[in-house]
Image (cartoon, rainbow, N blue to C red; front, side):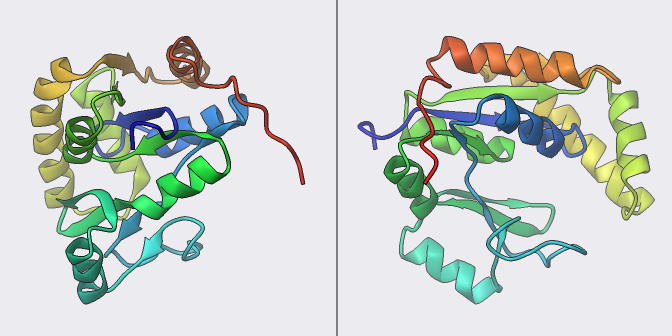
Length: 197
């Protein structure tokens, strides 16, 4: 895989705003390829298989693992998530650089597999801020929020092991996106030209 595309990984606690930040970043660096991840969780309202995520039953996911078809995978809040190797190959075919959104376990797995990968931790300004975001998101019980906050504390402790830490300040999304854009551009991302077919 070392001859493949540049790879960076963005991770952070549940509720920190990874999806929103990456969506805006993709607009700023059109040559980025953000792989679609595989998961055993059920689709949320409005989510489409193969666009938002690849949704699998447990036994189907087992087969992906057995066949070594995932770059990384991990258990996250009772479900499994992973990055299909086919998505990295797709980026190579499109001559795009890869920005993976994953959990902290996945970030470390990718770094171990591909030493040249850059891992970036997206952090909340505080745990209180993260708690507010989780409550506003809705759909989570009090117990689930508390569990995610405990996980966040552990993840924040491990953030010092990352190549970069970017704080996603409240109401300053543009600053967060620009900080990530600068990091990626300094690493050589964004130099590829997208040819429209």
